Length: 184
Ligand SMILES: Nc1ncnc2c1ncn2[C@@H]1O[C@H](COP(=O)(O)OP(=O)(O)OP(=O)(O)O)[C@@H](O)[C@H]1O
Ligand SMILES: [Mg+2]
Image (cartoon, rainbow, N blue to C red; front, side):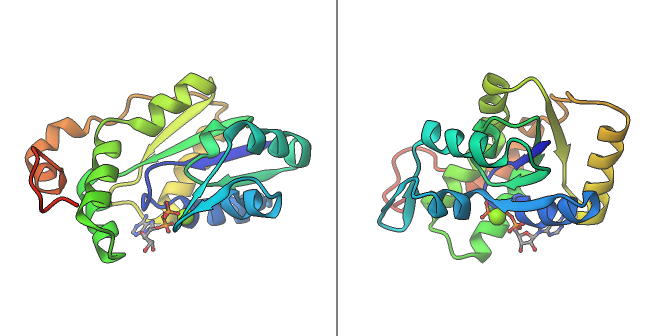
């Protein structure tokens, strides 16, 4: 069984995927490293540009018969049995990416992606089995317990649990609005 852990950059995928793999006794696979190992994708400056179909082919071929937790922001586009989409208050995403020293433009792009459910919508296009988890104010242990509890109860689909637009006022300062030059 392949379980994908996906979500907006900084949402906690790696933290949760490693702990989930440990609790389940599954192998942990970093999708970016997996892609590099298979020679999928090209470095464009600092970013790795990945051919999705080619990566999906390797996931199918190499991981299909294994018990794996697949970590990465493209993992929800792979041929997996279960997708977990981690969600977090966009303000939290903004603060975490600010700590990493991301540019304002890059922070805005990712805060907006979280606000408008980009990963979830992409996942819905590809897979039936999608569980969304709101990670806001929860410890990694609590998040993993919530995932395991749902899986143990045979729940494979649980979506539409967050609506960040309720917090628009708190999110606005992180967004790129209008054509201000400050936003490079
Ligand atoms: N549940 C949590 N509570 C508090 N802090 C967390 C939680 N999960 C992750 N973090 C912290 O948030 C930061 C980002 O976490 P992590 O690296 O796991 O995210 P990611 O989704 O894998 O990021 P990327 O998309 O860049 O790979 C780290 O500093 C991590 O320690
Ligand atoms: Mg990560």
